[in-house]
Image 1 (cartoon, one colour):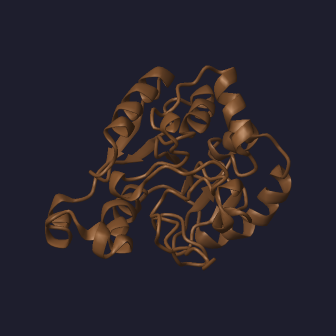
Image 2 (image 1 turned 135 degrees about the vertical axis):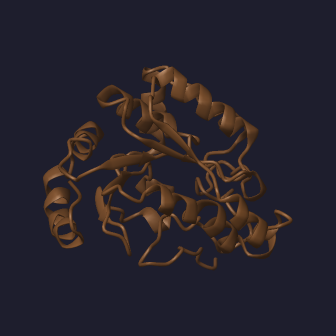
Image 3 (image 1 turned 90 degrees about the vertical axis):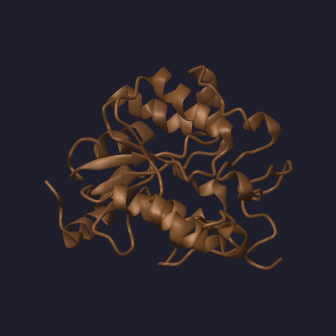
Length: 244
């Protein structure tokens, strides 16, 4: 049953205290138990997405998994999404795409990402996801604290700004070594672009490789102050890079 915003917010400090130091499986199991209402997982099927998706498949393969196809993704991502979902036996993967009429009106030549990348992300990703999440009381993300300054203080359970939903981050405390070890232990397939130096993978026009030692998201919107697509906001705003 859907939960009201006040109740959801009030529970978050208690949930974070209760699950502090607990394994990701325990956090994920609670999210899927019905205690938070109706919950979906949102996955980019990116560089390390296989870890959280594998954990999900071990608990409930019928959980809705929302995958946003912005129509600007790498072909490798689209193939990886299909192959990984099949390998894990996920039975409710929902491919979400932007509205064609909205694209025709707002990005006729598919070059909006050059002039206004925030508007492009809003049109192709944030808006379609918001529509897809209607009716859900919470959603599960694969964000980790090590992925950059904007995520360093992320809690396991968060309130989604401007919505009566809870965001759950079971892998918040994991680092790159833990993710790699888990994938090796369970023989999970890597995204093909990882071997080409892409530790974080988004849309093709705005994603490049990152050099060893760089922030894992350094290849996203390189040369710009932008670090987030707008799905995950910090204090209600898209997080920006600090000037060096």
